[in-house]
Amino acid sequence: MDIHSLDFVDGFSPELYVAILSEVAHSDGLDAQEQAILAQYAARFDVDLTALPNIPEELSGVSWSTRVLVYRDACMLASADEVVSPAEEAHLASLAGRLALPPGVTESVRTWVRDYANLLERLDELLSGPGADASPGGDGAS
Image 1 (cartoon, rainbow, N blue to C red):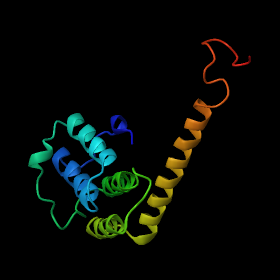
Image 2 (image 1 turned 30 degrees about the horizontal axis):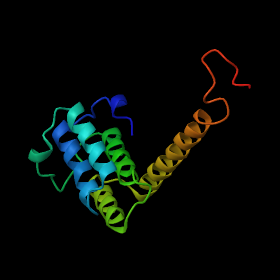
Image 3 (image 1 turned 135 degrees about the horizontal axis):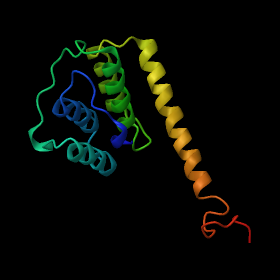
């Protein structure tokens, strides 16, 4: 998950944003990869992970794009370990309701997250494929 491309989303404080992601990550127990991602977000936005705010039940009062992006990032974090657990599924469903996102939108976001993960995997394959150890400026041929 590339946290450096995130221009902060309208209507959410960095603390609330990280708190929502933390809630998702903790829904089935925090694994090392999720913990590392949360630490990156906390460092990027100068947020203390031990002092996160309570998350309001109602989150639909912010812009549409913010709600979609928050849900997208929550889905990406939930799938960071390549398995979205039943507890994470339940939490994502609850979050979608709190963000007032219709089911068609949430499914589109989840499809996008899967597609993005597949693209990253293909990129990794290309980068580690034949010629990966070739010298700079070479053509990769032996």
